[in-house]
Image (cartoon, rainbow, N blue to C red; front, side, top):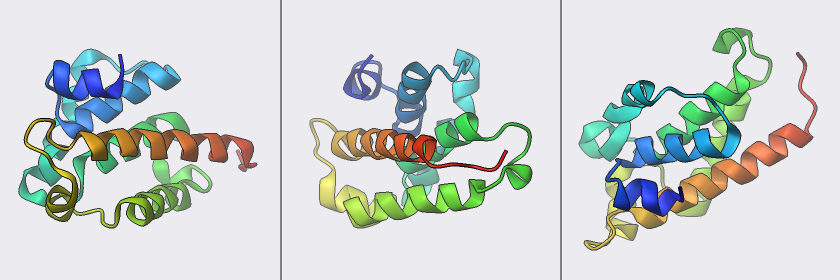
Length: 135
């Protein structure tokens, strides 16, 4: 499914849609029941703080990169920070409330942000896979 279908047609929230899209794109093998683990990230953690689409992207990056635990995965902290920096640079903020003011439309909610989050994640993952990591 496209990110648009996941977000609008199946009515997932921003974090769920990005994670489900990444699961399909990268074969992350996320069980449908486990998508609920990011449900609370939608709407900026329900209080318009950190963007749920960004948090869904970080969850997908985590599933893809972490083999055992985050703190023993070389470069993982920097990888997450890099993704956040990319998102902020492209969209102007990582805060849900600010992003909603800039991009939200009544007919499609935050589709633009959700689509950009998926695209940013995809480009970033490709770059990371081209760069050497210590394993």
